[in-house]
Image 1 (tube, rainbow, N blue to C red):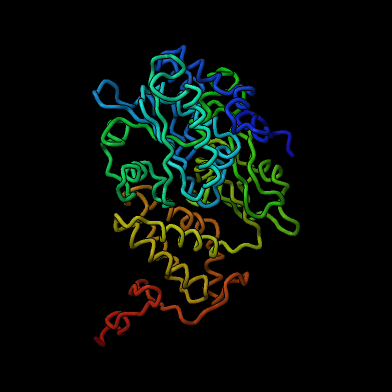
Image 2: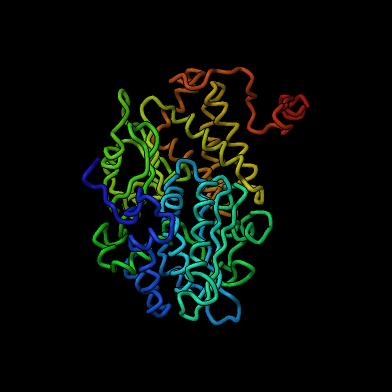
Length: 456
């Protein structure tokens, strides 16, 4: 393993019985909470700001700043919500944290609640994560028994309750306002903003929504200090980072690294490329982030450097693709996912995902035309930035990046009438139309579309 690997937030991974509260305490557990109880809420937020912690689940917004935006003195209860839905393709760094060290998240939720004067916290857990759910349920029950949760947290006179909510498994509920609607028992669809959750979130009360890793980091900062956290990373991207590396590497898995590590070293930590494979492209932050070509492999893993390279850190998932992978097939697969997971609330995402999927299917199966490439660009430009939430951007960014860096491969599909790498067999039953009728899998071309122009 590379010397760049570190053990910070993952220090208790592998400790036998650490899901039990007493074992957790023997390894520094709840020391951060004890420190927090000696501080004013604003002091906790200031520590998080000084540490420069940025959101570990998407856009990388500063966590302390986000907490400072939560409205106070409104007469309404304040809520803190953990987004543990983790439904992004290629992303798997939060689940091990909840399974291997569940009290770490529970402690982080209590400290975060103290920081924003919240009386109630919710962990919104992806429904498929059953083992994580069992571990968290046990940890929450033990925390109540020990007095870390409830009406009088550790005798401080402060109340904080915590509830584990098992979700139904909709990707759109990873969007924070859709998550809040789902938590309220409504259909999970994004809300129009403003108002923002900090002012009007769960049950129309001040709310903050944070990623698992973002919340779990805070007790470490209070326990060890800001300097401990900032010894890793860069000025704008501080601290350690949990990353899931997957794809065409010898040893895919979760790794903890300092922010700023070059992408090349991440691949080396995962055992390097598989035998007989060479790097072709990679996604630095999950399938919703623009892919980057192999030439960008020395990009430092920081928020600012990856943005400058043309992508985002996203959800902490580095997906590696070799020269034996078809970029059109990869992009088509992601597009089908986002087409399926669209909540249907807005037209650009609901209809555009279907159109893009059909066009990519034509190209990958050897039925595309050169005009289809321009059509992809045109449809993407009418979706990105125009959908109700960021799912529209997630849908289009891989396609736009794929065409930018690998247009010749798209054109080869058209010229040869097949996938040049033989990933997908050619088909001759794909209609050459941008729009087809929906009839539950038996798509038929409507008569008015099938009739040549001028013969209607």
